[in-house]
Image 1 (cartoon, helix red, strand yellow):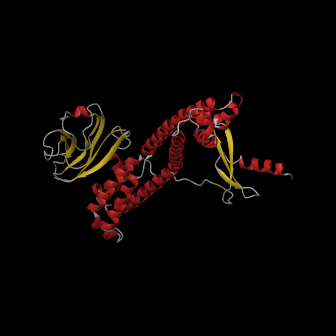
Image 2 (cartoon, rainbow, N blue to C red; image 1 turned 180 degrees about the vertical axis):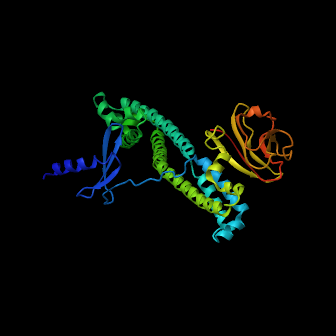
Image 3 (cartoon, rainbow, N blue to C red; image 1 turned 60 degrees about the vertical axis):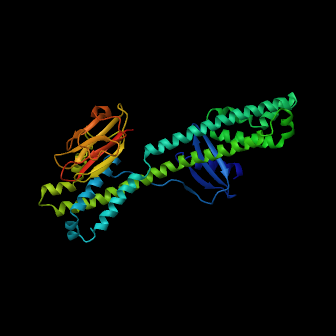
Length: 387
């Protein structure tokens, strides 16, 4: 079999792996990476580690049948119920210590703090905007370089000199092809270094070369950050799902034991039923928090908590009292010197407010929103603003 026949056979093998990124080693230990961009297949050849396996593996999928913010709320409520009944749990199973409950709550908070899809999307969009702006700077700088070429070389050499300076990459670079921008910079930098005298004759200022080198470095840094963010996004998604799955698994395990411990008390038992707690927070109903950036606040009897800055009057907000007594909560605005909310918007237990902030009828001149628990039992308040 000839080398060409071997290569054709090799190529047929790699293009049949569902267009996934693969790494395969040729007889000469040169790695072949297969990627797909739009409708064209690119083969990038470079020296790689000698491996021969698809660079893909099974990715985690959610085992919880609810939104992830609802999972966190149910889990925090569940572990709060555990705390209130910790002695009964430890009598049932000695692993249920106070420290155990603290660790489980910390795991919920840790999972919640991992970047979610909205945070990752925002980061990616910001990087792309910065990269595009920098690429525009590159194109403008290259146009300036073209002017020096036009004035520094004989007319019969202009076309070849512009090609040597990277002109072949310009059109794709102008269409947000970042690899073409990078190639344009590489060729143009080499050209500036190799033809400094001719370009100076053509009008190139003394600072053009160092400025162009700085621009090249700035683009490369942004491009690296952008590609890293793209590569890290699925990894961060997997890490978030894996952490959420563990939160759910640990919570259900404790809930199952809670149902056994309180099997003779229907009221106590339902505190350890996932679907019941989910219903309490409005999950899966018209009162759910879908589309809102919601936080959970446990407020002790007579206590108050600042939940954020005062939104604009037309900004949409969400508020719900999940646990507590019939007193509900009082929502007010504050400048930090007024103490608990004595007057304001009274939100009753298990009632959800979803609407514009101005409908609460609060003093818009004060900078912060405060929630006060006037009752005699701890309250769980959920509140936040529209994404």
